[in-house]
Length: 75
Image 1: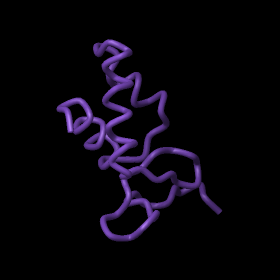
Image 2: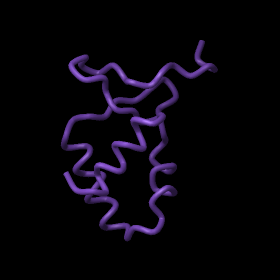
Image 3: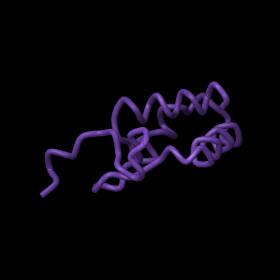
Image 4: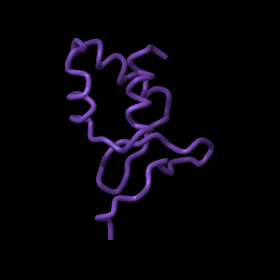
């Protein structure tokens, strides 16, 4: 996995994020390079989504359960 892809994974391990937040966090990266790294993250089958639609990294060995805690605004 490229350094940028690892950075994106680290961002998502820190807290759930919408795609736009990930893009904003890496504005210094050329768009094509960012999309390649995003493709690596997606291909690694690490992603899940929380109830708000934000991306999270799955807990290891748990199928599709996100690692991040539930939003305090979730019912």
